[in-house]
Image (cartoon, rainbow, N blue to C red; front, top):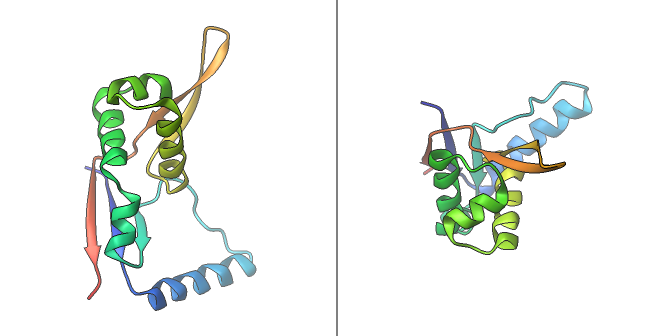
Length: 125
């Protein structure tokens, strides 16, 4: 079972990771791209603001009901298309949703996929 982790760590730890990544990029090292295994936050409130009830419902619907477009997803969850589209953009930016463009009826539609089955929460103390 593939898991994405949400971690809550002090800002100083996050900045240390940033500095190491920045140095790696500066020296030409390759940084892996693709679905993230961990999404970091500096507070529990920030994690709560990111993973809202609505966004969690979108992830569940994508994972279990396999919508064939963002429009179909919006209909499944009973939400306005533009709001769903914005939430999907945020989730995609953090690697929690992957979007494939597929042809349908002479145009391309965005098909969302979730590359994991569960979310784990890690809190540094």
